[in-house]
Length: 99
Image: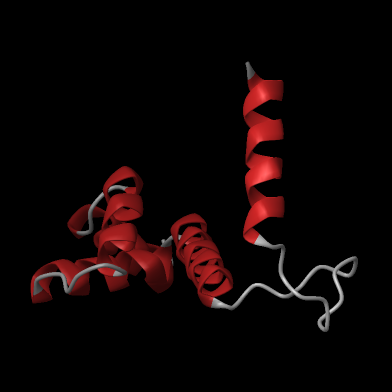
């Protein structure tokens, strides 16, 4: 048994399982976790590539959602927004179509 496999085995025994880590990763983005939980989470992410990738994906999604939406290519920047009357007509058309 190599030294790294011994360390990985030890860490896998003292860190939470992947199912808990996915929840903790999500929670850690919304609130500060207790110190011991943060340490265990970091250790788990060091040995588990899947959970580390999951964390990175959540970070990417979070970052993408925080960026302002870019205008579509079809809509020109200098076009004024729809008038309230036009918006009301569209809403009514969608309501009628849905029913």
